[in-house]
Image (cartoon, rainbow, N blue to C red):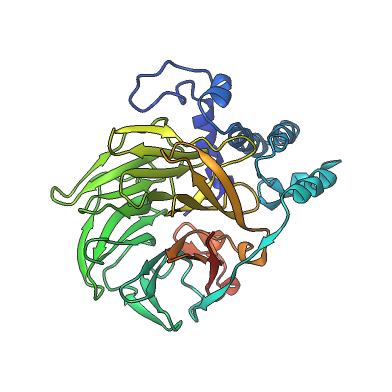
Length: 401
């Protein structure tokens, strides 16, 4: 789940203005001013410019926001403020911005390859997570509003895997299958109470375990399960990545290359040797063999920022980037050591399939299925703001390169 940028700006403002923000979480790096950090600490300067522009716009300084956006667009990375509610009003009345956006769209044209795969009859799910079960050739879809998990068969038939109200669940987010036994793991998070739980379900939907911190202020978002049982999850509220030890039923924070800001998407390489974590400013990579983490270098004229869903497929990261203005789905081929992007392929951009706040997806073979219309913008905390705007959930399908 990606917090709305306009709602996250106050937190972001604190982070950007912190002199120590550039320090690694190990505390070994020298303190750096916010201006120095803007360039030196992040591989993607465009991401910093874009989010600083959001901070300025939130503070009412539209002139400075537009100045920063122009600097961002000059880097030709793919940020598109015309698709953001934060900048929509100011861009509509700013002189010259119409032609700038037209130029941007000529450089990054519409890409429409997706087709419709499934539609649910329930309108009030407000889905967040999607997972594929190869054993049963079916999908699991989590619900924020109904606080349940539904199962979608290959035929498109939808049934309850974990019915609403059965276990008094919090809103359900990221969902993945255990590679060892095909059991189902999911994160849950109440924005109203800042409580979170990691959930474990058996093959019939029975609850095998629920795990949480004793303290509040956690926002468990997405997760992956490594072969052998370790669970890794992002916490978008505490800005951490945790490893959950199943034997000890305990969480431990991972030390990353730099401080995370709203970590969200998370992916494992197919050999389980590398962990990739997305946040507002890019993707960090943790090498399990060395214990060393680093920023994945997006390369010039490219951005890895703002990824909600993040997945590994044949040496590529597949990302749903819904916090860079207009959302896009892109495939990033990585170098053999996983430290830099060598090729970027935009799979879907400014198409009708990306107009409803896409969030996450799942890979089946060489196909990528994704939530087309999460309707998360219609949530006010844990509640639906306007039930009349709810619509059936659509799942799109893309062929991966």
